[in-house]
Length: 133
Image 1 (cartoon, rainbow, N blue to C red):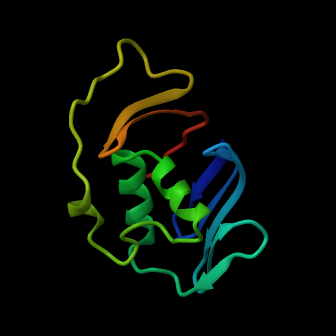
Image 2: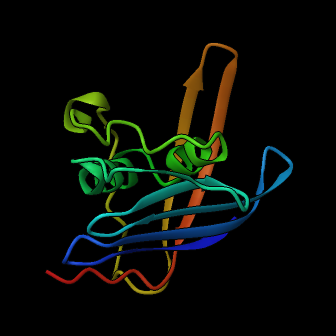
């Protein structure tokens, strides 16, 4: 999958990605502004009020789980997990490794997710990461 995520200081969020998930083609979108929230897969997006903790859910989800989980939610036309609150206590992480040398080029995140039916190995590569305070 390839896409982009933009989170603006004023609260705007725009996530768009296309590709394949589980061997199926997907086109995913999440947009939030001051008064509008739409999300989902395909041309017909779900609409509703902007969840009060959407930004926190996206940021904590991205840094602790990677973006794949929230993309999987969008394929089922579901909003990001815990966008109504409680995301900080939802998932914990461990086994961090700091890369050797300078942080140049794409950032890579590798993780193993353990399910009762087996493991899923995920590699996410982030290019063009810009964080503005």
